[in-house]
Length: 274
Image (cartoon, rainbow, N blue to C red):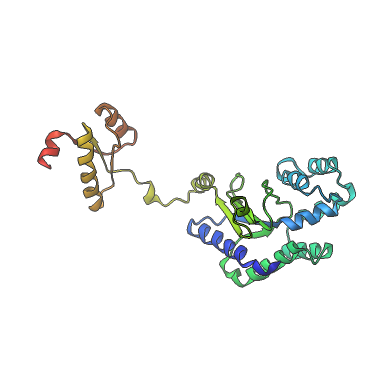
């Protein structure tokens, strides 16, 4: 039931904190609930075919409404009921969606969870978290048992950048029963691409290296580690070529990364400490 919905609210606040820190304001957190999806499956006459129904519904964004309806009819869905369901799914007003799904089954655990979730989020509306209830969100994984989440950028053509949800008893696979939890993942590569396209990285992190240390042998490499730390202690952006390659290869690398200075350590430098 809805008693344990605080974790989902907390997770949503975490998403908001992360994207605020990244200064990424153009996103939407889409939420849904597995039990609501199963209720919709029942509504379109697909009881006991909930998982195939979810798998087809999850393709809606990719293949469009007409083809999705066709595919769900193919597994036994009722055509008229599907049209009604699609009208509900196309609605983007959260409060009216909640009113409609309550009419279908007010005692449904998913309906109660979603209502409690949005009610509890009301107290944090000053944090400006971008969120919407999306009944077409199904997620591909079949082990979710409660609320599901997906985050999408709104100003860049990109798939989801985060995803996850509630899964009860997943730990049972490892012999630890009756442990519920929420799992989420951040798509770091995609988030990086979105931030790069929107020019959100601070300029100071893209400043180039000032000094690259190169060396003639393994012993000189080890000595170079001490030199590197001393340079960094003095706020000099320094790095050390990490292996004992031929010196020509190290100089070529310095050219590629456009290091303005190259510090060369040989036996004389190591022995003299200069």
